[in-house]
Image (cartoon, rainbow, N blue to C red):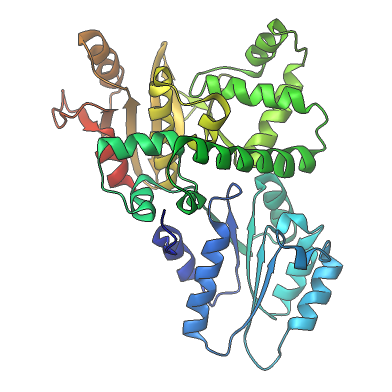
Amino acid sequence: MNNTLHTRTLYIDKIIPFLNTSLIKVIVGQRRVGKSYLMYQLMEIIKVKDERANIIYINKELFEFDEIVDYKSLMLYFENQYKEEVKNYLIIDEIQEINEFEKCLRSIQVKNQAEIFITGSNANLLSSELSTFLSGRYVEIKVYGLSYNEFLQFHGLENSEETFYKYLQFGGLPGLIQIPLEEKMVFDYLQNIYAAILFKDVVKRNNIRNISFLENLIKYIANNTGSIFSAKKISDYLKSQQIKVSPNIVMDYLSHLVNAFFIFKLQRSDISGKKIFEIGEKYYFEDLGLRNSIVGYRQNDINKILENIVFTHLKMAGYHITIGWENDKEIDFICERNSEKIYVQVSYLLADEKVRNREFGNLLSINDNFPKYVISMDKSEGNSYKGIIHKNIIHFVSELV
C-alpha cells in the first residue's frame, strides 16, 4: 500500500502550456481516474507561481457544495469568493452536477474575472453545452486510468510478467494505492466504484428505469470485449435470454455508457482508414479492473484483455483508432496521430505456424510503408518478418506511455 501523492506528468504537461490563457481548461474522464488529484496538483503549481493567487475551488462530490445546483447559485458563490485585487482561479470538480453551468462560465470568461478549470464525467453533456455556449473558448484534456508505467510507479512495483498480470487483473484506477493488491479487497473496492458510475453517471443522468437490462448489457459487453457486433446482434442475444429490447434502446444505452467514459466505442474502417463502416463496432473498457469485477478475471479471456490493454495505451498516447477491415481480413487497430500511422495486431502467444500466418499475414496485405506491429506475450521479440515488427506487449505499452 502506497499513500504517496504522485504527479501524473502525462497530464500536467498537457495542462501547463495553457496556464495564464483565457481558454477554459476542461479535464474529462471516467469517475475515479484521478481528475480531482490533478486539480490538487494544479493548485499547488499555481500557488508556487503566484503566492497571492485566489483559488476558488468547488468539488460537487463534497457535501459542503450541495447548495450549488445551478448557474445562479454558482455565480453567487463565485461573487462571494472573488477578490478584485488579485488574480482569481475558478476550479470546479464534476461540473456536470451544476445545471446550466455554461452560462456562469461564459459570463466570468467574457469579463476576464478568473482563469477557469473544470472537470467532468459526462462526455455528451460537456461537449454539447461547451460547444454551444463556449465554442472556441476552451481546450479539452482527456484523463485515463493509470498506464502500466504509472501503475508500477504508484504501487512501487518492479516491472515483471507477474506485475503485468496484476495490472491486467486489477486495472489502473489510482485509488487502488489505498488498499493491498489482494483480489477480494480490490474487487470489493472496484464493485463500489462500478455501482457509483452506474447509478450516478448512467442511470440517474439519463433517467434509466430498466436497470436490470443495463446490467445485463454491461455483462454482455464484458464477456464479448473486443468482439465485432451490432446493436441488433446484442438485441437478438438478449431476446434469446428472454429479455426483449429493441436495437434502438440498445444503441441508446451503449451511448450512455460511452458518454460516462465507462466503455469506448471503436468503429470499423477500410484498410486505408478513409471509409468508416456504420455497422459492426467493438467496445473496450476504460478500466479492466472494473470489467473484471463484473464478470471475473479468467485466463480464457486473456486475448480480449490484452487487446483492451493495448487499445487503452494507444488512446493514452493520443492515437485516433479504428478497426481495419477489408476482404474479410481484420486489422485489430489502425492508429493515426498527426501525420503518423501504425498498424497493430494483438495475440496472446504466437503458438504455432497457423497463428503466425494469421497475425503477420493480415498485415502483409497492406501496401504502404507505415510501421506494422504484431504484439504478444511471447518473450522473444525483435524478429521482424518481411518488415513487420514483433514486440512483447509489456515492452510495447511501456514505450507508448
